Length: 250
Image 1 (cartoon, rainbow, N blue to C red):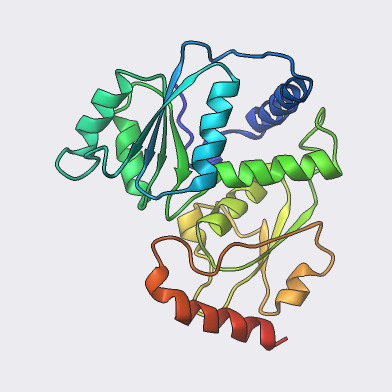
Image 2: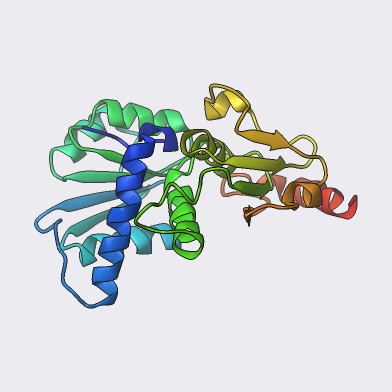
């Protein structure tokens, strides 16, 4: 049984299969061809961090594939509060076939997965956001490559990341190391990436730039994120000033 807690949980070969499979399923959906391999299967979605897009995408995806969804929020569950995470994992995983969790610290989802009887998917944590980068890469492959040979169009490419050294940045770094492309990173002072959090074997797959325009020069894809992610609202003004200084300096 596999969990998907960070991008590095799958191999390059598994991603190649996943991208091709996603292209096939999307083709069937666009052609109004019924494809429901998840019939009689149930996904539990646990939201400690709310999200409109995450809920709609996972819920719609499950229904389109023939499954059903149980939606839980902090008001509906006792995850890590009155009930230990380990107990929640044991109980919930006995009743469903798949669990998606969107929460704060990565340690929570790791502990849940360790005691779950079914696969667990990371819908977002403070450290990683694998499903978002998976979707971004698939979009790039659709527009700039070949879904029948999805990894070929990624090898040797350059992705520019201008933003905080956050969960998105960490996941881009993992994806680059695994799939053979390079990330150009430009962050404000004080918001740098931490290679140890991303768990990289080396720094060969990314380069750091103080000038965001230099980071984007010659890039095949430019990407960013909100300046203050959910949970960091108290830092809104400080982050706004730091990012404005980064942009105005160049």
